[in-house]
Image (cartoon, rainbow, N blue to C red; front, side):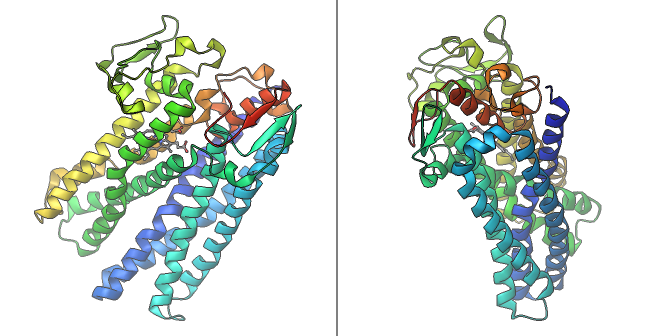
Length: 433
Ligand code: HEM
């Protein structure tokens, strides 16, 4: 049965949900910083900001809550075989995510209705818990995703799941870098987006106190995250080199196994010719980034089974977009630091303009990597829908939604192995290859 429409539906739901998920992680921090600053300075604009951001957080939280409910239904309906198989393993992080979500909802309630009912410090504390539980909620979900990239904490014998241990599963090798990278992505994207909106308004009226304060707080959340993001991305790349060489090779458009492997800026991979053209190549760059040694050998796609290749062109291009955006946002952060140091943060129209034009970039980076599978396990799983087995989750052309959310592709890979009755032993540090 061809479930392409159902899979598109899943993809659309995910595309919708991720926007609200990242806003739900970052917005409460801005709200709490605004309130804490108000308590400290008594400037009315900060209170006004805290209240407006709280209202925004509440509305977006509600939309996020509804869209996540849709997703949980879809996971069961579209991927029944995977959920039946992986439920005992990923049930723990999903349940913990549920707890984090409830915590967030309860404390958001305290925050929204407690303005005149609880002490100011208790009120700020409630907001802090909203921010913390939002981050935890995202982190737990990402551990599920990373488990699908580097499965751990279980064994399969004769197609049956044995020796399930949810904690090594949760703390799988890809978990830490992916969680850090995702949280930073949320803070960076949302912080810059909010700053961009206020930058536009400051361009009209540079002395407006409300927009100046909003701009400063949004930058405070977005810029440190943007500065740290390339480092987190580098960490994710190093872990990738050890655990998922096919994904790394596709991200980099790297076809030939070689020492002193170059890092490529731009370029268009040609799968038929098995080469990446028009790229600027920095010799030894990829070897160094992946293994900390310019002479290290990096496996190319040609040495990996053809049917394990990811869709190289979109993956490489999406990765390039993400890295370009990440590099630009890090530069923007440095620029802001310099201007703040010279006390000219609000006076540079060029900087305000640059921030305004960067409004959507973080969200593009997040959704580009998602959509084209540059993001996660999708790149490990080039297709083979036909031999995945395991229920109707496996139907449909391979170029559809599977590219959207990496973990679904991870499911396919596992499903394939289980169906072949391969006996696997997985432990942290060793994914299914
Ligand atoms: C120079 C900057 C960056 C580098 C080197 C980088 C590197 C990477 C790498 C190697 C991965 C794959 C990780 C994996 O699948 O295990 C990845 C995934 C990802 N990146 Fe980036 N990245 C950068 C900037 C950004 C920016 C600016 C954003 C968004 C604001 C972003 C959002 C993401 C997301 C959402 C994922 C998927 C995370 C996951 O698999 O859970 N990245 N990045």
